[in-house]
Length: 361
Ligand SMILES: *Cc1c(COP(=O)(O)O)cnc(C)c1O
Image (tube, rainbow, N blue to C red; front, side):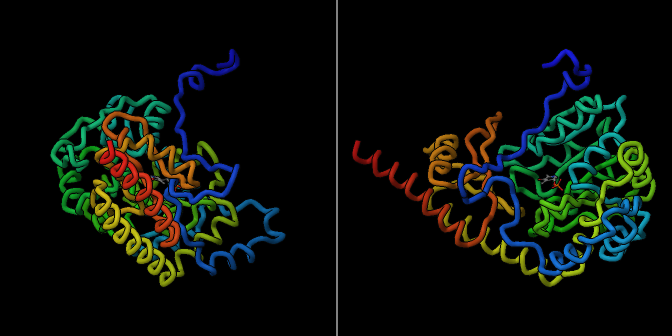
């Protein structure tokens, strides 16, 4: 607390990202990064863009990237917005598309940035309880008196709402914006992008951070009716005209053009996820079916916080949230097969050794 802070700065409770430790080399399964490097075409494009032109400002409309995304999703460029990571787009969406006279609705267990943005923009939040199985209760989002944001698949639960569920929420809220945060959609879900033509109140937000291995480049995008995109541009241009730098633009365009590499990475992550989910279930873990690049696991006897600490001691980082309803679970990003084998071996030691200890008591 400083006496020089504004009332706003003093009132904020900022988001806390997963740790990026520098003390030693960890197996990092704590921030849902992709274990595979970006496409070689991305690295080549970055080298090509790293020249004298960096003295010039980038295109404030990010035309090349916007058109690449529009073509990829067969939408008009006016339906595409790009941002410096999807977190930035989500912040703009809270400011541009949710009204301060109304609350914003989202699941009680969800991406922890939503309450942060709500309070930054002075919005009241209504946290809709997930079912005991962490499913989104579709009907609880019918005819609500405010905007809606749902991650699909949800984080950190990893669970997915089928397209019909999203459609149904849109149908029941024609006068309010519904934001679907699809950070993890490429790992097995069906995108709501195809609903954009039918629903002018739908904004789909995606990112290149997870499925395209570009968390370090900071590029996300939103797709929706041009009126929604205009709203986002009004906020963006009141904030920073150049959110996409020249390197980010070049790298992102190249990533979107290498479809084969992208598909292969997604297939690899999904195959590893399914294999590891099976092994964890054999060890006695509860593992909800995941459509994301992470698993949300609990052990019947071993407290999650203890496993979190002991894994850390073994050089393996996972994410633990000390929050109601989920404080006995770990969120585990899918790494390479080799990393995940080391993870399962460590858990086997920690849980089977525990069971053996119990027997001898
Ligand atoms: C990772 C994540 C994002 C943000 O990703 P960016 O790196 O800012 O694009 C947004 N929403 C959810 C649910 C996420 O998990």
